[in-house]
Length: 512
Image (cartoon, rainbow, N blue to C red; front, side, top):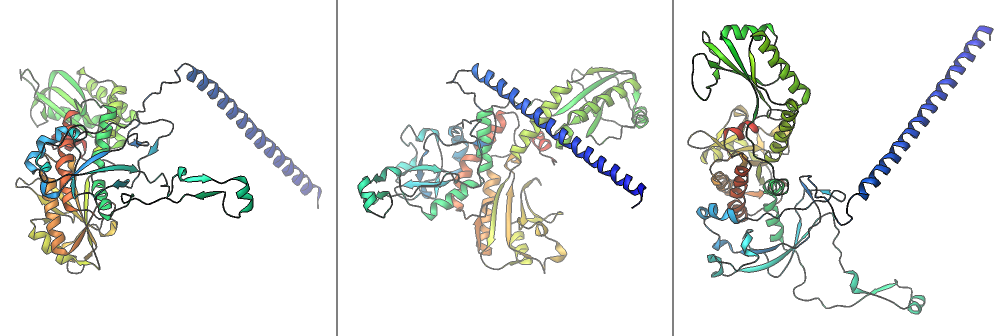
């Protein structure tokens, strides 16, 4: 080995040793810094805890989180024949009671995706039952009393808690001498008599819980409203008004927009107020050629996509408005606060996510597959039409969409029907989807969808399922819709988002 090669190896070895030393020093430095931060946070936390009363705990504002139940739910089951008529449900929904859920910050657990198991004593549940606020403290006053009422006590048991087969108090410890002389376990079980009212599970209970799972979006939204008390929505868009001292033609305004290169991806809308109008309330209209405008309104639609609510994009919108005002020699008449607008946009998206979950009812083929042309025949008999997106749509007399039917929700490649492939396509699951937040006439669309799905189930010899693929009862589903849907719509009106309104459609138009 030459002297040059030897010196090169020595230099490389020194470099590697230096790099390893520097890396070890950086790791040790980061560890010391992290330990110092943790110690500082621990001291700060201890100081903050000492300022609070040990018996005081702040309620959590985290939505959609459940803790352990504090009381048992007492329900009254009414036979199916004594269900209140549909016309009376609009008056009954005012009495629906949604008990607020008190959350814990330290022991909060996410909401289980599965419905809770119901353990009851006594006779099995009826097909129709619903919650009323006065049924717990006062006797029943409706006609169901004359036809016989079955009272049952429900105890909610979540899947996160294992159900013990035998309570602890049923065990008695043995004496030490008996333990030494016996090879059996330390504890021996008492012999107890099994009463007739022992806890048991009925298949009907699970079916009714499956039907209740269809209404979980409504119940979660009700819990969120009762615990967070959201304020009403007064406006949907961010608005900036500009006053133009010298009226401008629409062509000049469009040329200014082109020169400023306002080709942004933000959902901007520009409206104008015609020159010479003396109305007390400005009439904002779309720009038309050869028309003079003395005022401009630049709006930002915040509820289209999540990324539009980012603070830096909202700031870009403010800068664009200022550039346009400078180009047209206009004055800014109304400009909102960027920080407040960003918080408001995040609130809109938080609200829209809670309104986006639709009610889902599925028809499942018991064995085999349905030919698509057979499904098409029965769908058209029910008045449904195959839309342009390959989904069967039920429409009202005015053309408004009531609900949609998709093909095999669990298989993204088979969600659509194609007219040219109907003779060869097959379907395994039909999903009836209703967005209750878009419903404008109480619960009538829900009843229409349930009726059509029931007729389709009879025609296709299908099995009713909910969104989790569990069997449901049509009578129980209609009973829950009769109670929960009107109360859900009433809560939307309380927070200023009436279902079926223009605000609701824009709020739920397109989201990522």
